Image (cartoon, rainbow, N blue to C red; front, side, top):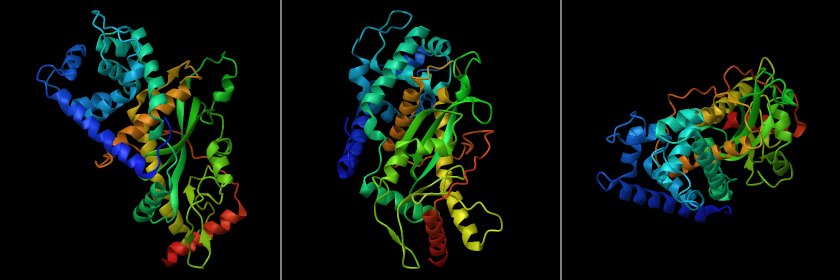
Length: 389
């Protein structure tokens, strides 16, 4: 599906929410005949048919209307062979059953056997349904994760300035590690060994002030540093060539201009379009203030990635001998689902008070000393501007 831009995308999201709410209302309007009641009864005695909306969100990590929207997205792909998948008693799984099984596999962190036993299906059925779901979401939901257009970017910049006092900021870039279990006898296993001695795959993401992913790249081995992953990414190429972050410039107090930029931690190089914090000792008041605002704005990425890994627990635990060709696609789909939940609930408050900001527990901060001279001057001018405004 082609990316949607500007007003067309906003109208589409509004229509999606309206359709999902109508579908949810229709499903909940038939006493005793709701799919949810039947699914509760199959959950190995863990749920009662009277389970409320909070229990639904606990199980599937999304409200009912968002669940219905996801079902509408993947319906054609998931129901190609309508009678292919059955419960252990021979009953054919409905569309909602299939989506529910796949979501439980991705968000519970449970094994194929555990998830299958809990819902009354064979573990091989869980595997087949989950992969079909991954393919369907990947094919149908791409418009939920894309680089913002000029109108959307203006709103992003406004929020970063209003909330964190960083004008012309377009996002936060950060990485997180997806831990894997590999045999030491596996060929090339050492390339996946990161600096904390874990086997891992890295996800790099650019995140907006609403915790939405606007750009991701994954599949790189944990042995690579943040700066190396950045230089290998499409984000670096597009920004270096002026295809991205080429919008309106900020006139600062000395009369010069500061272009659009994203911010990142000390593990990234300082570039004209990627501003990192000051790292030297004995910082001036100007630099201390810049670092303070920079750190506050970066918390949106920490929250988003922590929320992401807390929701999709399939990616949080240690996966035994994962398929390293399929795993990047699963990570991508979880990112799409992360954004769908935000897009469908954009008017609701996002409660992340209970989520730790430490998405990479026990990982030390990487440090990159590379800096572009033009970026050094730009960061200094922006620091002076923040002090005078």
